[in-house]
Amino acid sequence: MATSREENRSTASRKITRLAIAVALAILVYSGLWFAAAGALEKKLAELIGGANPAAIEAKCADMKVGGYPFRIGVSCSQLAVDDHFHGLSATFGALRSAAQIYAPGHALWELDGPGQVRSSLGFSLALQWTQLRSSLNAGLDGLDRSSVEVKDLQGLLTAQIDGQTVEARTPHAEAHVRRSGEDLDLAVLTRDAVLSLKEQPPALPPLSASIDMTLIGKAKYLDLQGDRGEGLYGSTGEIRRLVADMGEGRIITLSGPVSVGNDGMISGKLHVEIEGIKAWQEALRQGFPDEDETIDNAAKVLDAMFAGKDKGEADLTIANGVVLIGIIPVAVLPPL
Image 1 (cartoon, one colour):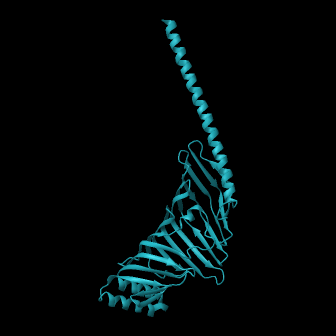
Image 2: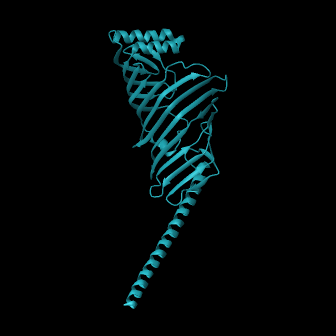
Image 3: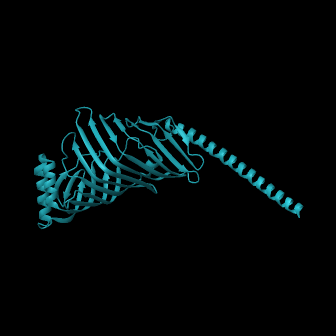
């Protein structure tokens, strides 16, 4: 009996030893693969941020590290700097942190710290600050499939270098979402209680909450970092599924319909508009833009006649090269983009 027990213990001991060896080998193989992938990722990122991408955008990731072992893989930098020489843009930001599950490397999460500074050769600079900026992205074999960004307590100060004029913008919450839809690009943007003002002056208008859901035709290439080579939105067409602007106190405008931007930056389109609180809009716009009293009042009179004196209604607008018409009556002129 004793011999039988010893044989059983010996057999169990050999099984445990074999299992331990197998686990150790699996850990060694997995670790080797992880560090090989980390090295390949670091090398590829170094090539991309060095300008080896279709958009020819250069970046500097100070103190770049690849980490996350054992179950994640990600990149971190103490400071991020980006240069787009073609468009004359440069930007600097705080620390960057990113991570992806090792079993789903195409789905990554990242965070970016402020402050941010954007400079343009067109003669303006933009200072940014926020308390939290988070993003997620999904990439496939064909490039980026979708991405989302959420920002809390965003503040921006735009300064014109020529005359020193500044515009300040603040919002407690903003988010943006893009996704590939064949060759088209779906875009959704939302902001809550946004306030615009000249520096050290009270806001011209009450806080504005706005959202837009639209498709840009043929612009999915932007998710591949192919670069627009200067075209931007010029020569573009799209469909606004829904654009809502809410300034509180019953002031709501909703738009939908096709739009286009000419090669000269002028906007054209046919939009269905719904307006609530016409008198409240008129009052707010008159207070914010006293130099445009006549234009604002003329537009209000046209709406009053169309809606039979009611404070809300809906109509179809035509925009022809920046000129906004209700029927055949011009009511406003939009500047080029």
